[in-house]
Image (cartoon, rainbow, N blue to C red; front, side, top):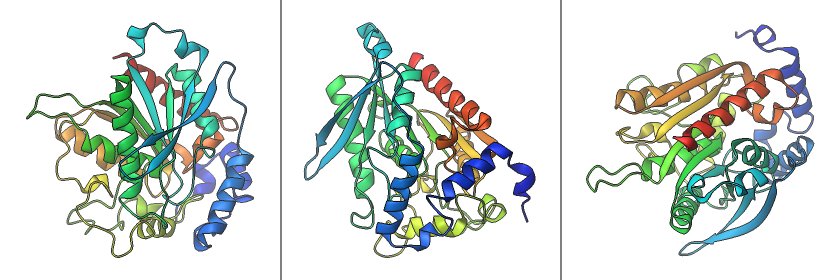
Length: 328
């Protein structure tokens, strides 16, 4: 049994205890409405004021049959840049198990990313399961990215946590560089934060999450393997699809021509190996991917960035990599 008492420090344990007062360990066994109410309470608990100079406005992107709400963040820093330095925007896609989250759930995180990266940020309020099954969430995120690229005539960076990391990767795979048509991807880079990218295909996994970190951290604080199984199945009406990279990016058969990728995983998390396998696949295909597995951190630690030194340092790393990608 994994010794979390040894792996996790006092600050992170305090964060776990505080979190579980709003979103208890058995939350995934409750009704969808209950889960959303608990998650909203959790998000309010960790909300902080915007950094000075950051403003946000609500907007929307109209697709063929649906209007996707978005929120645009700008700052005095990003607005003061010369037009030649504003050729990259950051699109943030939130987590929440594909069933929770909205423009409010990650509002403070997006505001701080805007301030610290000095990039304009667009947050996507994609449709949630089970009312809206796969691939509608993916289609919403893809539509927003394509619309913003066309509107602004620029490339974008993708960033998302958990389920949002999955959706970022699915969009990046769809819009990868086209060697046939000699067209660069509109996605300049992606930073995925403790993403769920599987189940992976292959003889070892059999298309299921039954190896590696899914076993070692099956009962980790904040997220368990049973929770992950629920979040996968709730996205579809029938069986979990196999061989569909828009559902599970690790199931793609081609990892070439993807944008620069950074995956930041939590070491105490059943999803940790997803980041490892994903980066290995990209690098093996000639791409550039970096996996950072944060020791002593748990799923959802972005909300701990103001109460944990480890989480704060990881957030600083995320900001640093986004800034570098934008500048390249």
